[in-house]
Length: 183
Image (cartoon, rainbow, N blue to C red; front, side, top):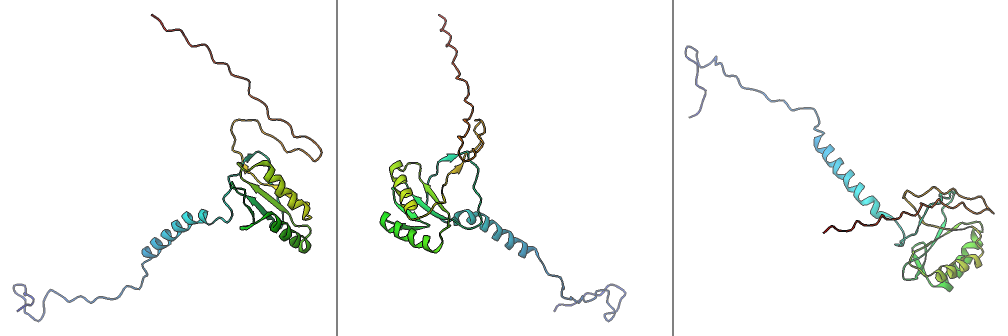
């Protein structure tokens, strides 16, 4: 048998031990919510760079400033194997010309940007550029990655009709002769 042991000198009806009554807590525990939100934030931060759209192309570096615009341009890409893409769709040169002519009839002032892998043959890039120009597009730009500051001089963009100034060349560093070994 279990029961309450009364204190000496106390009767069993008026015991010192009282039964506790529990009331539910009306507060919300937000710790699990914060934990879940932080995990989701980390997941989105890791996966966001992987969601970039486009054809993988290793762009050459440039120090030219970016060109701004108000509408989304079309992008013609040439990958390292010489395959030509309009957006993410692969086309042959003849199909690309027909597609670009159809787009030019719809939007004659559309901008076209070209991306070419730095290992692509120059002749291939000129061939694709010729198809774009023959389709009627006159606003054509070449894309490249922004060059990081490598200790070279800054180059300012030239106005139309002028040549761009050359970056200052570092003086040639001559190596001092190595000391002769002692015997």
